[in-house]
Amino acid sequence: MQKALVYFALGTVVSFLINYFFLSSQNIGLDLYYAIAFGFAWGLAYYLDTPNFTLSQKLGLSFAAMGVLVVIGTLIFNIQLAIPSILKFSTVFVAYYLIASFRGSKSLRN
Image (cartoon, rainbow, N blue to C red; front, top):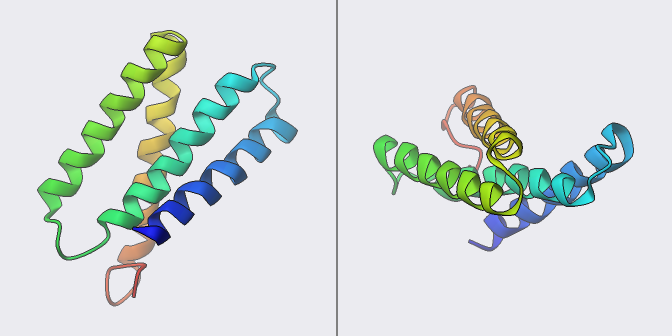
């Protein structure tokens, strides 16, 4: 769990710095929201990367996380600004497991 929090923190910080310095959307709150979505994806993917979770549980939890991101984003901003957060989340989540699939253990933890 601690490493998952480290992945979350590092993913959030790196994503925020990239968005802030290179993309500059002129809305620091939105940049932070997208960075949290990015970090949340890395942290959750790492946390679920164990044989303790079945594929259906991993998919269910990832869809629930995307739902939470949309609800929070809609409450803070609006639905049009919340949708890109789930696109970032799902891209990172899929990328994590794609990278893991090239390893013999099918996990980035081992």
